[in-house]
Image (cartoon, rainbow, N blue to C red; front, top):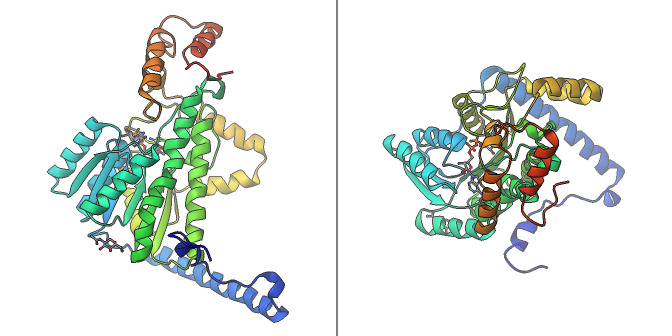
Length: 373
Ligand SMILES: NC(=O)c1ccc[n+]([C@@H]2O[C@H](COP(=O)([O-])OP(=O)(O)OC[C@H]3O[C@@H](n4cnc5c(N)ncnc54)[C@H](O)[C@@H]3O)[C@@H](O)[C@H]2O)c1
Ligand SMILES: *[C@@H]1O[C@H](CO)[C@@H](O)[C@H](O)[C@H]1NC(C)=O
């Protein structure tokens, strides 16, 4: 038997007979058990859909929100403290954190903030340890921080691709590893993954973003199943997949047709609802559920035609005119990248619309040793 901390969790896996050891009767009973339980869940779901899903009380929970210094994270904090949740905000932006904390404090809520770059594993573990020592055990984790490069693959510098993965999905491993153990010990907790509709459909110029969001959707589902297999019933996971949101800064000026971009307040309200109802997956707006079914049925040409009309250009215009901040690379690299960007392109306003020169300049604007084409 393995020793050490982690054997504790591996030992919890439910004993399910391998197929080779099952008698015919076992197999038949197992099958009918599955059908009966499934019917039970369907009836429960219909009942609650008609009469309303019960909403759990969040009063007294201790919550960490990554990316709490901006957009959605801040709006979630404002709603959670109103429900009696103690909120700890993590972000890389001191200014963002200060603003968030000021707002939440003014509402009379309990709020702390910490500078944490979640793409750095050691910073996450350290901050989690500090929280445990100072404030207690986290029972609600909202993996919300996310970044975006928003360029064609061959125009995206390597470090931005790595940054997308580090922040949008790999960080989820560190935060969950930091907070799940005490949730398991207390048999109480909730882990929320803020993914995106881009975790279900691919969009041009968002290849790195889409891949990280698909990964985040998979992370949530696999984690949920693993907890269930371990027999842990009171730790819930939810994945939230919104379409483009207005006024958070990320996709503000994205070019979208047919489906209106969402109000950030509506999305925040919907996320709180999903958490209180222990929803497994919330697609926002709801009718994307139907569109996803259609996607699996219709020929690719229909899906492609739809997506191309829906999002003619996914690059938020502000990304083309301001240098990208790159917290997860070294300061030196960052300065170099910014300087290059300031002198060269990514600035489509400088009367230079010659595509070829733009591309060459973009290549020059990347860090040495990185491959653009
Ligand atoms: N805005 C949209 O249209 C939209 C749509 C679907 C999903 N989402 C997702 O919702 C989440 C929140 O997005 P938002 O719109 O509020 O974006 P935002 O850019 O306003 O906020 C993201 C926050 O994360 C912080 N952050 C970035 N890198 C970090 C790091 N390494 N460590 C700690 N914090 C870091 C930023 O400083 C910022 O405060 C993201 O995961 C995003 O992908 C956004
Ligand atoms: C946090 O959880 C640990 C382990 O379950 C427990 O020993 C400790 O007392 C808890 N801390 C608080 C503040 O509840």
